[in-house]
Length: 467
Image 1: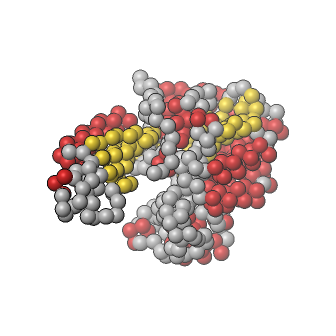
Image 2: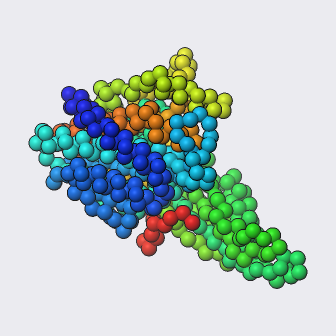
Image 3: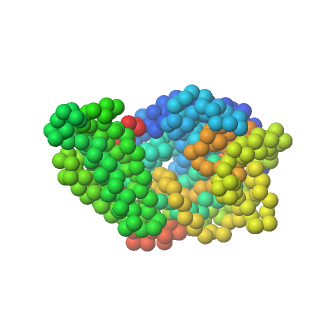
């Protein structure tokens, strides 16, 4: 079977892939500033015989590595951005930043991008050895964390000729991601008032910080009157300074609005804007609304998911040694009881392990995902499927120090390489069976019905780094 051949291809280069992943873990670059990470991945693709186009879609850290020609075209999606403020020493069972306040890979994107690299390299090698036609592309997708890099890339038309796409995410379990995520908008509300001495002449000042606080109160009241599945988050990104004896003339808040569908996000966003304008009116300040980014919900594709699940079953799951399980146990001991209660089990009688050692059964049923991903925009354009592998301890959560500390260890490397094998095997299966590609496209068309894809990021809005 081709799964065995592909597994061997990836294992033969495992040291090279692990080195790439660990270097990206060390770089820990945040959205749209992943210069070293992007160059490392792009350079590795070139050394493997891919033609690489850098700076695609008008984004400096976005790139596409291609091999082959003509149809079918398979896109393997890679991410490599980190999170701010999540620095953590690796391989230890206590929270301790490597550099206080620095970045860290709290979502495992160093693994994500590298497994996709491994998959693309293996598909290329298999195509060469078996004289297969078609094109395999690695999409270097920056800024997934709060940047929606793929949505910007989709707006530029970079996925329009793709026949199907594959991706994955490191998690604490092994599964097919039969999910529909939440769409979202991310928007800055920037208030400008007038400074004054807060004691001597407060009546002459107009507080931008008051406007931010009133807006937040208003949105808190709004939460009772939006759909249950929606989420509204905010962060005060500028509180107006550090002097309480000054009426703050400038303050801003960043909002993230989520809902199952883009039109639902739009409706809530319009109400949030009205609240912001009301807060400005109450405080006699001015508000500037700056659209930052957006992404669509994921559209599931059962056709590709079934192929992926079959290949996952044939490959089995990663096996961990005593030292890895010892570390997993120590790190898992740091979880709260509530976190432990989220642990994966096949049934109530299944033991509660520190590392999951099975594949979750695949039923095809859609699982609601309360998070968001810009993979959603790709899935509206071309049939898309994703999987997860157990790279982290059972019950741990994304964006935690436990993920950062384990992200450059052998247990994470095993999950990463395994994901590469699953994606590459799935890609080869689809390429060898064009009827499956047509079936996947027909399914996407059926799921969308009369709805057509509209990119949720307005024209003129460009990718920006975190402020």
